[in-house]
Image (cartoon, rainbow, N blue to C red):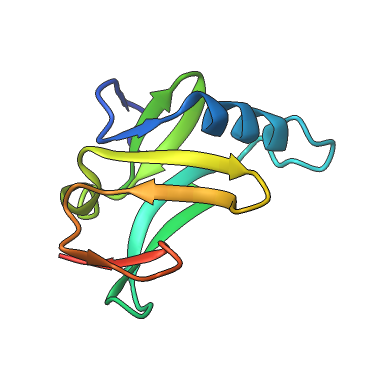
Length: 116
């Protein structure tokens, strides 16, 4: 398994996202053997959906440390993620992670899927 950590990440977390992720990681039942996976998968109303979940590392994953948060990204997904900003909203009008992707040619109304 690859142990190298890549320092330049294709994605950026806002301060709100960093705070929320660190809060989740501080939960008593959090599995510290897992990493934050940032990626995409086929599906959703626009063709591709975002992945943002704590998972086990796979051999093909590249490691990143973003603001102290250990992340994994499949290199095949990086072309869809490059330059993307992930924000955390907790207001009355929106709650959850929001993806701003400069590579998306269109996005769905909920913002969790896109096409290129």
